[in-house]
Length: 169
Image 1 (cartoon, helix red, strand yellow):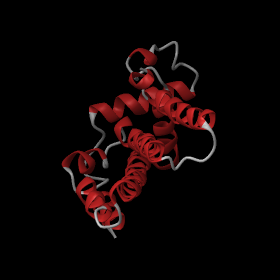
Image 2: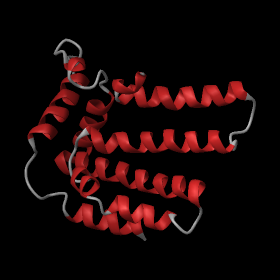
Image 3: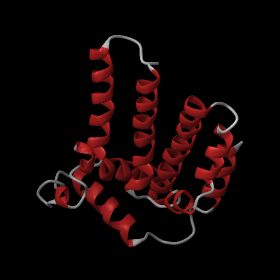
Image 4: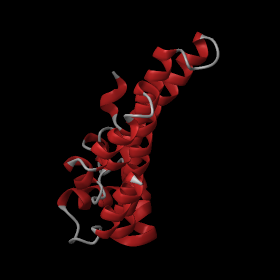
């Protein structure tokens, strides 16, 4: 119900105005990258060291214009809310999970970035996967030996680093 409410509010507000400056930067970077100019235009110096989000955002733009790119961000945040629900459920039980999802879904930062075609929306689900992996590691819920756990953690860490290079540390 929380995710449905979030999607209802965000989809209703997707067409609130024209593109913001940040949206324009990300979508132009993605379009230029699809055209083969992303590296030569030097987008890697300011796109967090990765062209993953500009490419994904431009794909949303190609499929549905500005609304398509914004919808992609909204859907990524909905996935993030679902993962936060699960993360809280694993950590603290069923009693607190709906409240955690509600708090995140109704927070100003989620509501603001959910209607913009910027990298923050696409980045959150990957962060939630890493947090979930950490909780599972601490609780010993990951199956397999220590090597599998290390590989599992490395794969999630690598996925985050594809989108945001600050997490390589």
